[in-house]
Length: 244
Ligand SMILES: [Zn+2]
Image 1 (cartoon, rainbow, N blue to C red):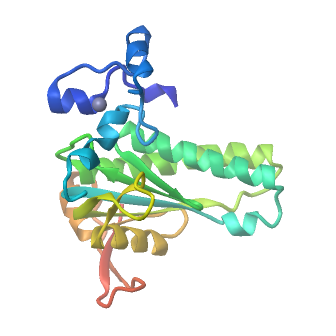
Image 2: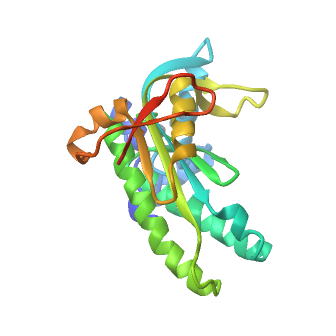
């Protein structure tokens, strides 16, 4: 995952034009005082990761952002025929490839939830084309996971690795902040998050489903496919989704 590692914090540079070294000899004094690469995005520093929560009196902010959920399909079925070690190897590979795709497009790997990951685009690194970046990251994740799957299937002795990745993306205004009793849990909530998660839920293995808002914002990278209406759990009206 070394290929996309920035030398200075992209967040600090973008917001203040201050070069905060993350790697190399100049980063040592910063590391001593606790400023190091964020575990959510190695191209930003730990100050950027927590800055918003420290300066927000209300503890939450409304931001325009894009949310991506990716879920490993076939994991449960596979877990019946593989050793726990092999299964954790599969999950680690999935997390690695998701992180690679997300970070290559300046997204924040916000959470891993069981066999799914959640990423935020436009926070804290700002991107005027965050919906488009999320779509590109999703395609990157699919390509990386497919390449990795074939190698894994061979090393695990599986004739046909029956696993793939389903991805859902939605964009809009959402709340970002610290929620729950664990105040280190910095995350996004709101309808945008829920719909992205539900879209991922109906995406088949290998599929990327995006909302009309993402489709419109990322139009130059979308094909000519028509939307399909989906019934999403917990949402009354059918939701139009496009394959990306
Ligand atoms: Zn920073």
